[in-house]
Structure formats: C-alpha cells, structure tokens
Length: 370
Image (tube, rainbow, N blue to C red):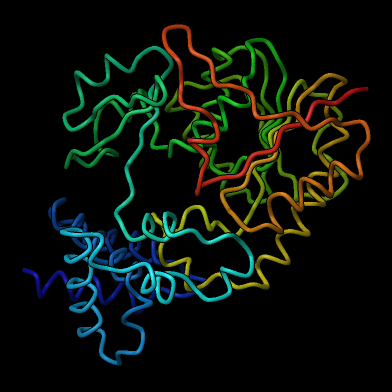
C-alpha cells in the first residue's frame, strides 16, 4: 500500500508548480480517486506536504523516490527529537535565502515551519461546548472561546455538523483578525478582499447576523464559493459585488468598519503551505507591496468619521507589513493608527492579539478622525 500511496504522491508532486500549487494539485488528484479510503487520502496529503517541508534538504537529489525517502527520514528524526535538526541546518535549508533579506528570520519560526500545523476550527458563537460533545477528536482551546483544535481522523467536510454550519475551518490567527475588527450588531462593514468568505463568516457571526456586510473580490468564482459558504453557515446579512481593486469602488456606502485582508506573499502560511516556500519570489514581495498600498488608499474613502480601518496580511515581510502601514499613515492625515486592542470575553481573559498573530499575520488598525 505504501508503494501505491507513493505513486499518488508522485503524481501530485509532478503536476505542482508555481501556477498550479500543490494543494490544488492534491485536490484534483484525490477527486479522481473517489474510491480511495479516507485514511489513505490523509496519508497522501501528509506525505505531499512533508515532501515540501524538507525540500530544501532533498532538492539536489535527482530521483523523486530518493527525495521522498530522505524527507521521511528527516521528518521522523524531527518528530522524535526536534533538536536533532540544528538551527544552522534550518537556516541553510528550511526557507529560500532571500527570506532573510525581507524579514527577521528567527530560529523559533524556522523550527515551527518543520512541524505539522495545528488544525483549527471556529465554532458558532456560544456553541463550542455543544460541538465538542458531537465531534470526536475536537478539544477546546485556552486561547479563544470559539477556537477548537481538531485531532480526529474523520473527514470534517463530510460531517453533519459541517453541513449544518456549526463550525468553520479557520486558523486561530485569522480568528483573531475578526475579533480585532470587533464589529457590532447593526453596523455596516466592508470586507474588501473577501475571497471565499472565511473572515466574512466570522464578522457575520460576531454581528449576530444583524446589520450589513459588503463583500467584494476581483474573482467571480470566489464570490460564488462565498455564496455557498454563507448559505451553509446561515449568514445572510451580506451583499456581494465584484471589485478589481481600482479607484472606482463597488458602492458609495460609508462604513463603520472596513477590513482589507489584502493579497500577499503568504509567508505566515508556510507551515501549512510548504510548497509556497519554493514558488514565492522577491519580485512577488515588491509587486504585492505596491498593490497593498494602492488598495489601502482606495478603501480609505469609504470609512465613516470615527470608523475603523483594519489592514491584515498573512505574511511577515517588512515591505508588506510595517512599510505599507507607515506609507498609509504618512499619506492619510485623516486616520490615526491605533494600538492593537485587547481581545475581550465575558467569562475569562483571552490570549493577546500579539500572541495569536506572531509568525502568522500582521494587522494594523486605524480610526478615522474626521
């Protein structure tokens, strides 16, 4: 069976490239193999991502079978004893050399990249205890009240709880972004780069499905997926519109809050998306930083006086984080940058935003003065 699995893994790896990411290739290959047992599909997925986690050590090998064998050996060593892979090796092989020119590369971050990521779920507000009783392998987090760690073996997309909209698969850093927005029931918000709607669903839940959220994206297919997700989650307080990011906005509405979760290089996702380490380039950083600056300038006009503007990116490069934020602050005197607010909960203290965002996301918050 292992040999058969490796043939599937090899098919995925051979079809993956910069324009055809490994996660997309994996979904396509597994879709063709509908009769594959779920546990085999899970093993294939784990092997594909493991291969790319250790690609920096194996890339000089010519034979794919040899690369896979070496990657498994390294992964086994690391899982058994993380210190068996010294920091010097991590710095030499875990990420491309250009990364150190664009961000502060810490040993902690490099070490985190080589372990399997935690699978986070977000439950509907106030329904965590109820879900935990129904979903084997799920356990509550001490960090956020609706954040759940899933360690089970069931295909979550096939569970009745998923189809009933009782939870979403969402990383805890992304959950923190929704809480930092802190939208209130009855307010009007704009999720300017909504994608397939992960953060919009959280905003809607926090707003108790009251008020209105505008959702825009440049890709119509993403908005179609968003429509299916909102129907499953029973989130109905939104309106969708195409927007290509230019100065002509999709609406003349003025908003209590605007969330710009901008397109970025995604270095903060390299633990769960290791293939991107080897396809992202320094040119991507330069081009995306310019896009981010333009998007911020364009959406600023839609924020009401005293309204909030939140800029978030799942990347860590200086050009796409503080440099973009500083550029906006210098250009827009009507906005005052705010410190990251504390995350509040009625029953107990929550983890700090900085703790949840570290090594994963960057968030800047402004309030419009006039």
